[in-house]
Amino acid sequence: MSSEASSNAIAPPVFDGTNYQVWAVRMEAYLDANDQWEAVENAYEVPPLPDNPTMAQMKNHKEMRQRKSKAKASLFAAVSSSIFTRVMTLKTAKEIWNFLKKEYEGNERVKGMQVLNLIREFEMQRMKESETIKDYSDRLLDIVNKVRLLGTDFSDSRIVQKILVTVPEKFEATISSIENSKDVSSITLAELLNALQAQEQRRLMRQEGSVEGAFQVTSQNNMCKKEKQSNSNNSSNNTTFPPCPHCKKSNHPQKRCWWRPDIKCHKCGQLGHVERVKRDKLDKKAEPGIFIGYSSVSKAYRIYLPQTNKVIVSRDVQFFESDRWSWENDKKLEFQEENADINDTLEFQEQNDDIDEEPVRGTRSLSDIYQRYEFLRERIGVCSSRAKEENVE
Image 1 (cartoon, rainbow, N blue to C red):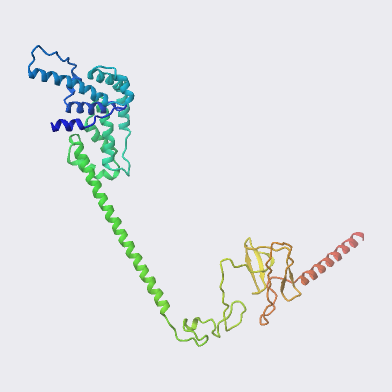
Image 2 (cartoon, one colour; image 1 turned 45 degrees about the vertical axis):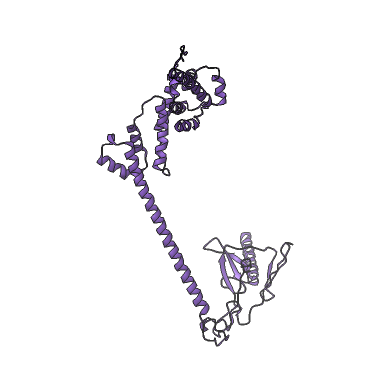
């Protein structure tokens, strides 16, 4: 009684119009478990009871009638509402089963086309590098089971050959050992899958160990670097020097003091100090100069720097056409700004007295250039007048 109640408590599989072959197998097992498949497979008629029936005859008559009614009720409960409206007028369970089989299983031609499509899909399958053996085998078996449900025989040896051909190169060692030790035609699908899964698990274990070892090495290196940095910082912060005789401070050695008498300032050229430069990222880094010509060895400009009394060659030059150089005012730049957007004015100090005012090598003053020009013009005029006199004579 308990087994019958438990079997009746299991809900039948519901058919919604798709995957009829799978539903038919599951439904047949469900009806057989509930002792109702006989009413679907054999459309028997319940004979009437004879006069003065015995208790056994009455019990048998009742069971046959209940079996047919329960089979019909189970089929009604195992279809969706849209399919139920098409089979609700049928009287027996066998009629309902035959109608569903004829309607959704299809004829031999349709089943043949479905088998061809499934076999084509099976042949196109390839295992991905990121895919496991279990996932790939499940994908193949899903297609094979659909082919088998359509009534076509599909052997396991064909699945074994497919797996041997389509697995990635990382399983080549295992496949070679299997081919050398056993006959490929006699290998079962379970043996092949177990061998490939074992190699896959070993590779995963090695990768996990290598990753863990690499992580340990990296963490140890980082800890060593941090210890070295902390030690260097502590040593630099705790280092003390004897008092400097020039500035009386003890945070630097004597040779690095900015105020020692033999040091020379790179800006003013005097001894005894160094300019303290704290340059910001947005500070101006350009130096004003005077354009004196073009370089003969490269595509660049020759610029005279008044503050250092040097001539440099550079391409990074910006010209100010409105500015001019005053030769009479002791090397001082005077600006005539016409652009209202330029608010900053440049102002340069006079040169120190200890710098000799020597002419720049390779340059001439404007007065020399003008005198040379006047001399050449007079010379050309004299030559032209003599040529005219000779022509007249």
